[in-house]
Image (cartoon, rainbow, N blue to C red; front, side, top):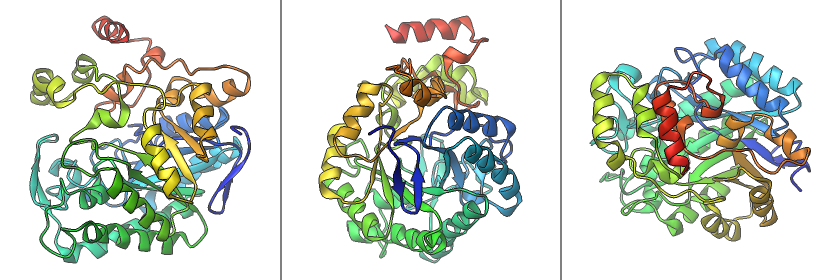
Length: 400
């Protein structure tokens, strides 16, 4: 089944593998770079069915890093060059579109970060301004405009980010949505902003591209969304016309390792960090702020089964697939596609290796790649010839 074609909306993939929308940190001043192009082309040549650029903000206020893409007409030509090369390698191209909400800074977003509710984000750290009701429709239109730019750029699919505590997710979750107007309170009210965004997305897509939505199965902490409400959200997305759902979980600003699992190598994380005060703050409190959540193969599968029983549309499984055994287990339970991030960072040609009979990507899940993405481009420590000795010792300790 792994190597049989399958469709997402109007788009047919050559096999069931997708490079997940894992933030690369490879853009330069919010523009596509040669490094970004080279990486995704290497994954396409490595046999994947579709590779996903991640993430691209739908407007300036949605940026959390300068190494993210910002969707605007000026970058369409450079994005087209990337999608042309991906297509030449036989793969399809997708781009994740979203808004980070409260996970930004004024220096990056150009304004005080926006959220569902006025608050203070300790994770950033920054004050957050709750969005006014009259700002929501224009923000939703930004999602539609970003889809049109993606179409102009040659993408086959778009992935709307409605999970992980990003802006749409911040409206969905009772943890971040404490509004007293028609966009807060009941789950039906909290879904209204998501509906507005999806209406604009589907209108812009107009059947020309496949529309995936990344959505949480749980927020991953007490006081967040749990599985029953998340299934209600998923059913709503199915009714709103999504072609496929990417099933994930966690909140970057509250439960980051619930998303990725395993340890966060704090020494590696702080080694690349700027400014100095942030580096020292994370050194002192990092283990408390980013606690380890144990890693296991296909760690989201138990929750994902509940969604498979509740939904009819194609589902994309993501979370702990780095061996042939794990991939076959997921596909054998009725999931149409498997997304992989760390496995394809470790070996961009992993899918070709699977076809040749290899069983594992060789990822040891110590999360060095994640630790450095807040300061540099994502990279696997196995591929870093200049890894400082102190970091190598930390990673060896975590492996044990």
